[in-house]
Image (cartoon, rainbow, N blue to C red):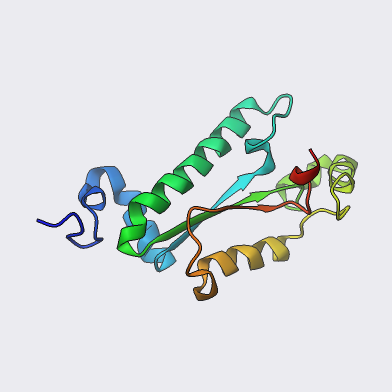
Length: 144
């Protein structure tokens, strides 16, 4: 049997018990998965060890899934967000503005901007892109 057989094209995807979540994501995402990470995965931050480590693991998973599921036509990418205005960050108040001001663009991400980047990576125009973690941080990581 060829290494590219079965419903999803790779032997790894045939292990239903281990990959049921991926199967659902593939069906929903129409062959593109975009994970959401953070700049904290690449840079340490006091009090953020568990959060940063979990997002760093998600970035490694993004690259591994790109290699594993690419032969089945599935693209897997991630966005690594910098300071962003969301329901969760409202409680940060001025601290969010201070963090955002330190970026080259001097501003926080807005939810609609993040959505457009994710939509791009999930869409047909990004067909040649997989295994990428795209910094969406107004240049913040480039200056740390």
